[in-house]
Image (spheres, rainbow, N blue to C red):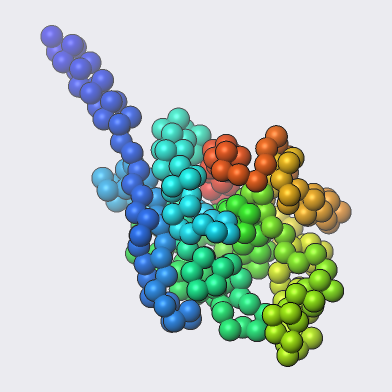
Length: 286
């Protein structure tokens, strides 16, 4: 009878563990002095967050243009996919932070005229706030960034601007910034005819992924583990291939995936499990 009772308890405990799910809160906010407004964000907390005292690695997961902080929650099924990956052992339990970059002005960058400083907000306000508010391992070795389309562009630039802060970066179907200094000048002049050439050049050098890669010091080539993924029918396919070629020429280690698919949520939902596994391996390397 004791053996049967113990077996029942064991099975019951296993079922409880399997039934545990993470939690998502998608309408949270913090006050930003830099942007002079409240900024929303969503967060995924892993299944054992409320029952443990442990600290967790963190993934900053960036949405694309036209979405907001709810994009990965509503269309990307981040809770279901992450719970499944954790349950199956392909991903380590982690906190996922999804900020809104679609309010006020769309994008993850500081604009050329410095009148909107979203990137500064991200690093100076959002990251310190969430890493103080939640039980996050506030260390490069346990921090990653990923995102799709516009968020893939943000993933590239954030990792290349701040390699000291991220263990891994996974741009998906990513924008890769301005293609040339001439196209950058023409676009910025249309927006503000009085913008100085020095500001245009600085913006191009800061936002062109290929330019950033070409000027990367040898000492930083292995600083961030990179995983690049883009569909073969994606309109951003060429830019991602050019980034891959630039990295090959510079001998920058990276993973590069071209899979069957287009620029849509079907593709990105299929990509997320691979991203979670890749960054989990990056966390475990240290």
